[in-house]
Length: 276
Ligand code: SPD
Image (tube, rainbow, N blue to C red):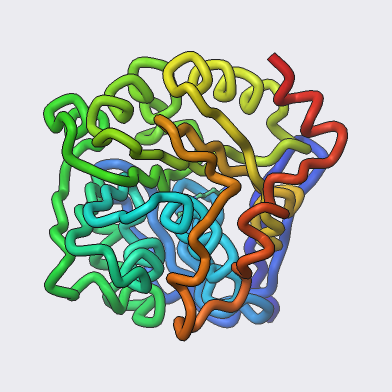
């Protein structure tokens, strides 16, 4: 018998993949969590029916949400990750020698536990001494921590369910205040092909708080349409200008020094979405 998993992208479109085995399912206090072993993408974490990460393509998302903002900062020492309980972003942040402390604020402890148990290659850095894990709501955390971080990475689920409050002006205002002078933030920001209106609104919200607001893209095969965006809000540094030599000697599979700038070169329809 063949087993298939489908993520519904619209009423008329689904992404389906063949499943070897369902490794784990549970209802956490926040969401439905599943870890499936898929034929094309290896093990996959699914939250509320949406693909969060897979063993085969996770490097693209985690490298691009991390290395672009960290290379843009002159000397990132203290980094805040909101969401990201699977640990992939933590693993990438720790590839930067300047980083002394990473605070991971994940609302759902069960995501961290599932990643530790089923996705060891992604969660491997969660035990590092430089990492503090706080199981709490990122919205409250940024309200209560002022002038503490050099880089904030919002590695959230999609803007429905527990992550909804991570996509509005008030939240970005609090992220601005939690950043030190010269700091910057990046947030995953969906597909320009599927969510143009959402991205336009987010660009308006981030741009009304940060003096510099730019969008960059990466191709992520298991996310809706594959075309994926990241929006960067910066207090003063231009995120396109990276100190990319910092990553020399580190294992990266997608990010390159040339991509620091190239990822900000946008297709015409995305330029249109980003117009004020
Ligand atoms: N449509 C899926 C968007 C998910 C973005 N966050 C993934 C978290 C991986 N660390």
